[in-house]
Image 1 (cartoon, rainbow, N blue to C red):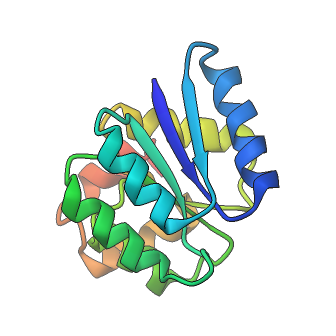
Image 2: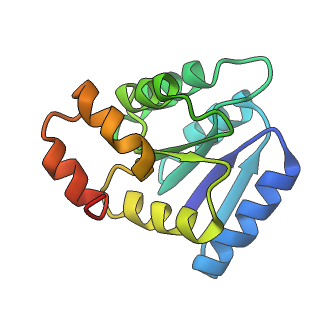
Length: 152
């Protein structure tokens, strides 16, 4: 498994690296603290299994970076990580093609479950935000989405 972690805070990238290596000791975790670095790594390593992307990157809109990454590789699984969980932002990243949204306040065990879920082809949305996403109709069949998110 090859994971790219994009966050401007080294504490976050270091902690996520340790967490992902606990999940899979054979994983290769690559980190970068810049949008430019993320785009370069994506270009050089198209076989990435997952990108964990912080929306709050300095000097660049997180949604613009997400859009750029999705346009280069629409099949790439990108899990957005953010300290901001306003519903509009969550819906926007899902509409742009993110494979899920994870608030930074989430417990590490739940984050690992979200990663496994996304890697298996699901779209992860925290239960407290799921109803709002369903009302917006982003994914059409809300019952299917609820089932994918563990019935929540």
